[in-house]
Length: 557
Image (cartoon, rainbow, N blue to C red; front, side, top):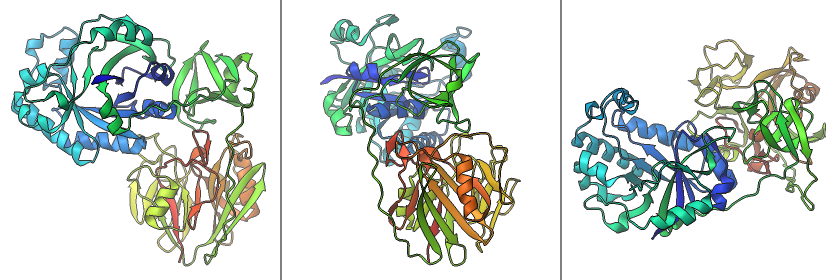
């Protein structure tokens, strides 16, 4: 029976708040694989809302390439995508003519179209490629589209299950979820038109609103000032159970402050508490924001994601009392690790209100490896897959649109040639010689980039202005030719993290003459022998690892 609420959204929905959708009984969000897929998908996942993906089949583009691009985006997101829905409804062969027709500068009858054979053959290839990937593959279309533009597809369509569109005219209107249930759903007493040869039991969903209804939780802008239209669907509960679409709502962090933005004209919201973190979106001057956590410099917004803004440009309007009985998630302290590897020393220390994990490595006799980017993986996953005894996270990712952010090489293959802002890198040659540089490299063997020099010529980099304490992963080289890798815990009641100056002071105690800062924050993790030895933290969950773009591995002889 088609009676469970499902919503699908695309690029016109720039801001999302899962709470109204969860409260409204939505069972699944289906997100278009586009530039907002990962951002919105992570928000829903963090809130406990199941997600699936849909892919627009574009017959003007190569089938293999477009499928690979969508699968690559899904895999890199590391999100729990439950199914893929190829969207089969494009007949036009010219996007320019299509948009001209939309803007009423060209008659629809003049829009060039593909023949039915081409539409059918191309779509069939896309479906087969998605199915071969192992993802649950269910088609989306309209019976009228198939009949008019691609009846040739009827010979292969029964192979798949279908989510079908069949609209009623409701007119553009803004509704609450209760109004949707009480006024609209009782009128959906009809089934979608079936393409010839598709049995009713092959239909898992019915899209009935056609971009007309605006509902709480979906917004056309990041500031959530205007609703965007929602495509509301009714799905079969057995199908949702089959794919594991069972909402598990999670609470937001407690509200500590209500504030107003004073920056002019806008205030950047970043993915972490520091200017080195990417900008996610901007808040307008005068915008009201809820704050879950604040220190002297940075405020964490009360959202399901890591979203931070400068506290300097906020005016506190209301401060709220802590929730009675509210306790921080306890941190599990890892037992010490006895390292018996030749040439490697591991020690822990408590410095600057943070647990620090320091590994000192003689270069002679060790084998090093920087992982090539194939997909996002945690440090634990990389260690288990490769059998490496020591693994730490590498460079950050996402700024250049490909991973990682800057220079990277793996066993002689120079696989990331884009250099972001002259960031420094460390290269470990085939003979284990170590070099640091920021200039355009030529021959690299195992290279990974950081975002800044911490130490040069045995002295701290005085140009660093950032004083934020955070989890850190740093790497340096000593005057007696040893590699020093340190991971510091942070963002918990027990661990404040380290500032760049504090991390550098510890490295200088070991005789470090050159050091760079690798990716930190939720990415910081160190694996030794057979487990993670520090307390990683991702999405404010102590002990949770974040998937990262590349890793530095040591295979101990």
